[in-house]
Image (cartoon, rainbow, N blue to C red):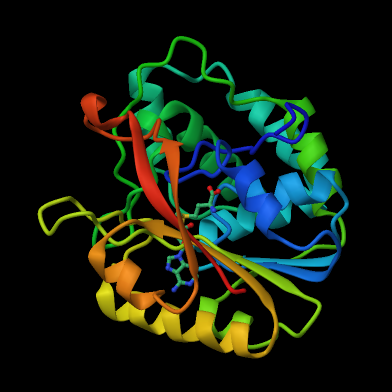
Length: 272
Ligand SMILES: C[S@@+](CC[C@H](N)C(=O)[O-])C[C@H]1O[C@@H](n2cnc3c(N)ncnc32)[C@H](O)[C@@H]1O
């Protein structure tokens, strides 16, 4: 993937290192491209760079994330101004002060999202049961909070893109033949003891994965090109046994346990 269109966030499960492999599985020309678990948007940005789609719809359940992409698309200048004013506030006590702030305008919320992503521990997004962001300070020397070049490139890619808070099932129902969907849900944990990833306050457990597998089968039936990533577990292999499944190796830079940051195998499912 080129250095030009890099994701604007650090995101758990970010697909930068796998983007090329995923792009190979998607059609050369896509009418409408859907990314219903958009997260760090690595695949969307890579496809945009190659001008592979006519239209794009990127959605996620995380409201603050969707607010950020909307502000990057529509209010870049105001967002950059706010980020510039925050770029020196990187001491621990300043981080906790900003972390405690609630509400504000959509520009303030978007700037805070980027600030917390770059300054907090490992770029994690974690909220408590009341929805309060609770990631500790990251201790980075010079976190890149103000990055006009990267944000401007992303803003150009986002022009004309539909960006909404939606559940994956509802948005997938709109895709037609000629369209393509890339699905990158919160992964099914490798073991029962492995901590599940809470990107937003609801967990994404086996029942959600079963619902997703049904959505995937429906997309395939309607001849929509669908590609899905997941962890390689007996459950995920069973859920997608009727589709082409490949084991792919991926570097995992975001893991709270340093020794688990190495290469792990995950599943890539294609609807052909
Ligand atoms: C693994 S991350 C996506 C990573 C992303 N593709 C990237 O490259 O960085 C999963 C995303 O799914 C979102 N999510 C969780 N449950 C959802 C649901 N029911 N519908 C839509 N999005 C959901 C989370 O907010 C999170 O952003």
